[in-house]
Image (cartoon, rainbow, N blue to C red; front, side):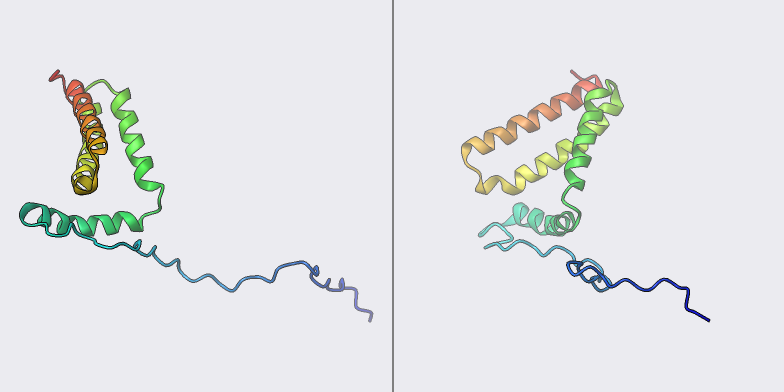
Length: 134
C-alpha cells in the first residue's frame, strides 16, 4: 500500500523557532532612586510616607495604564453628572492628587507647588458644586 499522506514541509528558512512556554510575568522592579523617604523627615510626614510606601509599591505593580484611565473615567463622570454622584466621582481624584502633591511637596519648585494647589482647588470646587454647596 502506498503512503497517501502528504509529505511534511520543512519550515521556512527564515521562520523563527517557537519560544518555550512563557513563565509567569515577573512584577516590575522598583525604579532606582537615592531615597524612598524624605531625608530628615519626622512626625506626621514620616508616618504618612511609611504608610504610603505600601500603596506606592502596589500602584507601581499595576499595569501602567490602570491608574490614569481610572482617574480620567472618574473625572469625566464627575463632569458629566451634575448631582451628588458626580461629586462622589471627583472626590477620589481629588484625594489622589492631594496625596501625590503632599508626597512630592519637598522636591517641588514654587511653580510646581502652585500648579498642584491650583489643581487641588479646582477639583475641590468641582466636587463642592456637584454637592450643591457652592
